[in-house]
Image 1 (spheres, helix red, strand yellow):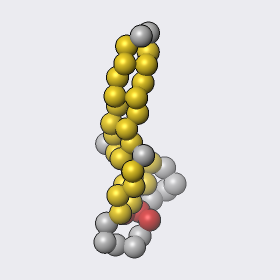
Image 2 (cartoon, rainbow, N blue to C red):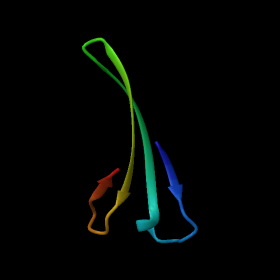
Image 3 (cartoon, rainbow, N blue to C red):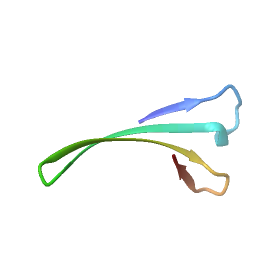
Image 4 (cartoon, helix red, strand yellow):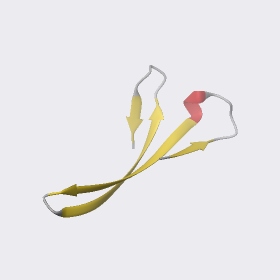
Length: 46
């Protein structure tokens, strides 16, 4: 996981880029997605 912080100091401006290596039924996949807080202690996935 990697956090990307903009020049603003607000925690709501922080975005997490997540890379996951997943094995399911002998199939290997790499999943990448971004998460950012939406202001109500929930996260938005892009």
